[in-house]
Image (tube, rainbow, N blue to C red; front, side, top):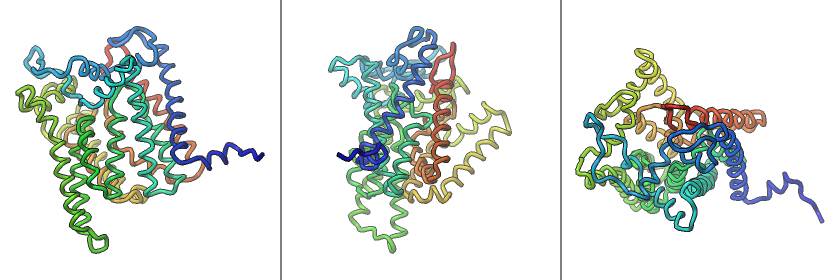
Length: 395
């Protein structure tokens, strides 16, 4: 009987089996890091000293999802002593806590159920990412893109009690459907994604730009009337569901700006309570972190660097649609997000860039980028996850 070497068996394994092994292997490495940090974690507002894995995986905003499942959303917005809207559950969307809650019906404790859902969604996102990357890259490069996705610096969030991995799953599905021009199927995916994580409005911009691109390039790439109607309809739907949650908060609380006021409460620790003025938060953050004029110069440099990145040959190889998403999401963040310690996690939806990083085939390069990612992952855990006294660096 012929005995196959591990390398041959790996090459003969179906693509999905290799993705599963890669993702679970990455999560095992992360688990070792997390257990090491948990063993030296002191008592904090969420756990006692030296918590177990599942307790440690439910720090920070994880508890808001549990509050939503058990108590729902407040019909009256809580306010501070000065009359400003305080942090509250309306900042967190309902799909993830609902799924975790369903798992608890089978006797699984909340802390474990939240990790199970996050892990399952992360694995799903890795599988879809491979299919997405395979539209542009050879199989070995698409598979290495999955490696980079799985060991990315913020990838531990995919095994914590956060909704990020579920949001990445819906996003990866939406991008795959967009690339394959299956516009009708975008409607149910967007409907669920819009109530999982913010980002539907950025995708609406992507769809609108996609429609324009197809219209102006219709001579070399036909754009039939049926596809025009479906793509336009999906765009309108994305806009509607993108604004749905703020509308629901208004209807439930009677406060027109209840959702934005809730979101602004999280940045008040840095710059106090201010109105949301689009395209100003990055400059405010730059001033807070670096002072002026260095803060403004740094932001302008980041904008220019990101714009140039979209035109690099490795990024251009990923196709127009993924680049439109990257540009749209970048513009969305520039318009509404205040950069602070959560920035790295918020950048996770730009994961298609792993396809650009995965293209060099040199062994030294691939091993180096994986090692660097793991080191940055440990750095992210040290900076953003472990609680150190009166910690002001939430993930």
